[in-house]
Picture 1 (cartoon, rainbow, N blue to C red):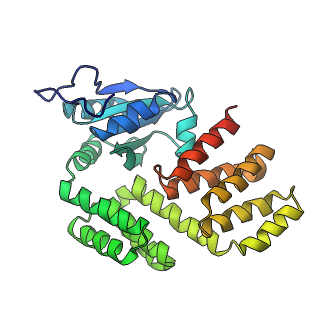
Picture 2 (cartoon, rainbow, N blue to C red):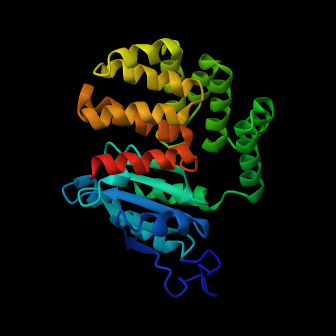
Picture 3 (tube, rainbow, N blue to C red):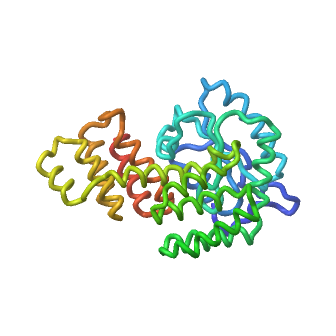
Length: 304
């Protein structure tokens, strides 16, 4: 679908070719979800035929999405038939719903929520103001550029004005993680309302905090590199090296170390290398080149 193609018709209904509810595959996920979300929000429903709660949730989701008259789309993915994408996104239980906007996941929830909560979730999704979205984008850019103080000020102001804005709260927590103030980061994440603790932004920030704690214990890169070189079969040394490399900013090096473990022994330490890669992807973000490269390389190993 071209980004220039109108998503909605004159009466708020779907434009020709723009389906409101559809199923997708691994091959079509980028087109149906990532690219489509640049025109309107897209909900992704990860489900399976054997999942009882999924059967309860999906009809409610479909009803709520239809009520938006094309303002929101719903894309369903059967994780039994297409496990790659949910695996890459770290989906460990279903039903799991992710909301995509502007090509990236911005919120989500797990479990079969009641209809009122689903309607409220969608209302929040489509009700974000342009000003808040622009400010959040500016704060993310500032954080990426290393201007943590500027980013923290923006995230903090939005959090005060919009207590339900989990992107802002998560962003503020990531600022504390970046400065090494892990206790403040944890305190900030604890402010998330109970029904938001599993939202995509909060989950990602929590992963960043967990990764920072691991990195604190990782050790010296040179020493770990020497240890891994001396004992190529020591997969724990490779794993520790990956954490240290990521902490030093060498994301490609961290990928190489973990992917080497997956190539040698996929099931080592209860699938620890793949799980750590998923956490890296979540913390780095879907748009990071290392995430894109890593997901492609991991898929090549797992599904060759």
